[in-house]
Length: 187
Ligand SMILES: Cc1cc2nc3c(=O)[nH]c(=O)nc-3n(C[C@H](O)[C@H](O)[C@H](O)COP(=O)(O)O)c2cc1C
Image (cartoon, rainbow, N blue to C red; front, side, top):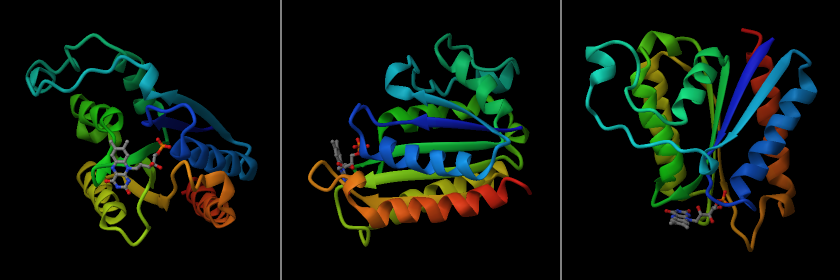
């Protein structure tokens, strides 16, 4: 079984990035019957910011903070594919997602080796905007550092006046990306 962990950053229930990522996951699962998916909504979780205390490195028993990362660390460890979704906030990802990613720090780098990463973002501005490239490059660097495979990225223009569900080309792109992801889950 290939384990997929999906972490949604948007604070909104009627979220474009969540809807688009849901479509992507649905499509991946339809192409592969050997996947299990765990989906987490970070807005519902109590995840504190990294304190930068370095106790995880000095003592070597993980993060000393007691919060919902206790649920997420085993899921991160077990996942073959991690899918992160977020709205674009101020040319980056939203605080909920960034806070979650900051806490990856407590795991040893080797625990991420050869896991696969996909990132999905939606923003209000057009897709030529630099924010989508900045986020892609940020996660490419994260993957280089952690020795993860960055196998997919979508930076899509959408807001409540132009919802993802109403943009046919957006769902076509999700289908195309799902093909790539489904194929690369074998390797
Ligand atoms: C605090 C805040 C900051 C935002 N900053 C940007 C931005 O820098 N670039 C952009 O394209 N859209 C920006 N937006 C628009 C959202 O990214 C856009 O509406 C997105 O589709 C919302 O995603 P969601 O529906 O998944 O929450 C911002 C919205 C908010 C509320």
